Image (cartoon, rainbow, N blue to C red; front, side):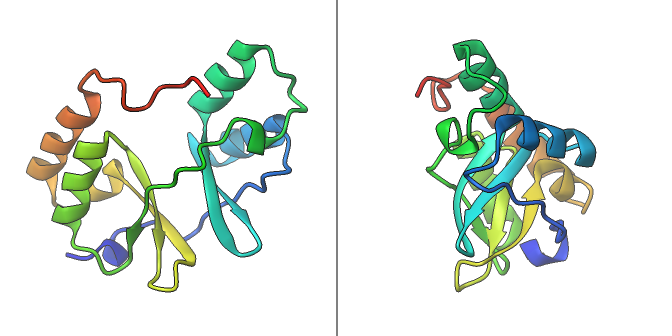
Length: 144
């Protein structure tokens, strides 16, 4: 099965100039813990609820601080035509629960989550990936 068969196509995108408060409100409105960050039709980063809590609030930043100040600019992604088993393996190795999905022109076309993959019949492999994701490590330090 390919990623494009189970990804979420409706994606809300944050702008790097958006405030953290706006990004947090968007996450609350759509019940999501992450937003891709785009600028000039390109994916330039990711912001998560954890980035806002740890890198922003925990560091004393104001709700008016900008998304660009706390987003991760090293973006991991997958392609629409990638095989799900490969994506699950990569998510486990990289300890990532969600990935932006891009086409071969690197345009954002969706998001795929570990939940999307589990809901589409990949339960065993999803469980293995989730075990890797949950493994303690320093891979995703919240320090800037």
